[in-house]
Length: 447
Ligand code: GDP
Image (tube, rainbow, N blue to C red; front, side, top):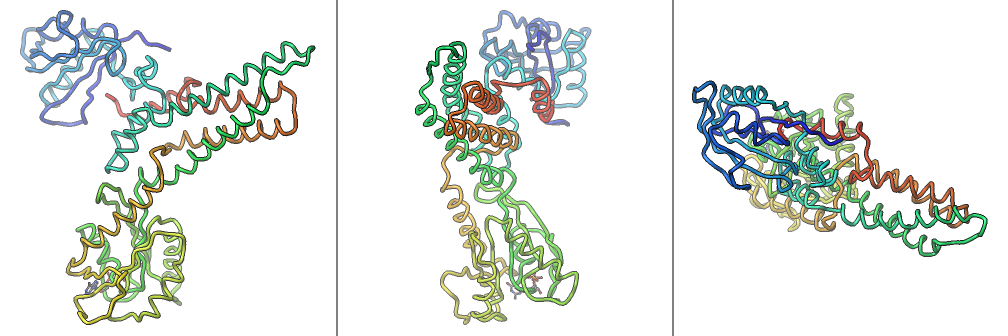
């Protein structure tokens, strides 16, 4: 699978910028750089940068900084040159044309990272974490991607898998001596180990719901009676006039969803139609959706109008919401009634005047810290890993049942091998060309 071509691509974001970085990787990277620049990259020390002029037929195209990385100590594990040129579209495209003329090929999406994987610089789950790192929008998503890129659960998984391989090999060896009725693999030890792997896989699968929300945004439903000020609060949090605010009860008939980043977390704020009985058919659908949003949310912000809602009504609403969710209760419109007696657990707010927003955002952040704090660092956020883990779990359960029922070694070995394949596909120990092209085609060019 190893490629002997030298590839190039613009690695910075598309468009015009102060600086653009063009990356070359492959066996001819130094020769090709020499053909377009006025420096001798062969005599340049590895891991160093030098001022270099790019010249085309004697015409100066740009003055750049050129960096050299020699194999295997580079991102891809190959010889790499990075040219930081001025970010004009003309300079970028001219330089790329010159590199292609000098023998480079244009890199495909994710090809630099794919080469890093193929050259053993990282395993597949680490390569996928590179894409997540680039896409991370909040501190928590960044931390999760960085943890996985640095190795994450790969090492633990690899160790568990190695031990399973050992058992599979022993059982397969027994098959060679089938006449003699020998047992090289201790069945009790195997049972213990399979249980350990099953527990570990289960733990990883359980972490996915958190991994998913950290990556794609923690869903927060804003609920309350019509006119409580839900849309006003959404706008206040977003600093925007996204939701229509009006004083006719029931204006937010559908759900509105917005994303925002605060306190290191990425949120999906969902403004709902409100909770109350309604005869209006469209509003009824909206109310049903509200309850669906509550179900899907990790955090519920319940908001009530301090002047228009009694304590009994608030309690009744809270009872209806009573799902297993983090709940933040907000007493809104405090600007209208300074005398209203508030429950000390409720956050006083004037969404209209943006008074009390700090306390609310603190509470929101604390709720997130609570959710994340209950998990250790091993979090799965990739759907492909989840699918592989589920398939592995199915096989492992089969192995476990087989051991209970004393099934023959050949069947046992088959199930173990199947689970090994699924576990191995996560880190890329077991791959197919299709799988690789599927994964890397989702990367951007230049990465
Ligand atoms: P929703 O139906 O819960 O989404 O409520 P809206 O956000 O549409 O607000 C209903 C009405 O209450 C609007 O006229 C808002 O301007 C008003 N409102 C919202 N928050 C406050 C507040 O903190 N103080 C005051 N005085 N009015 C508010």
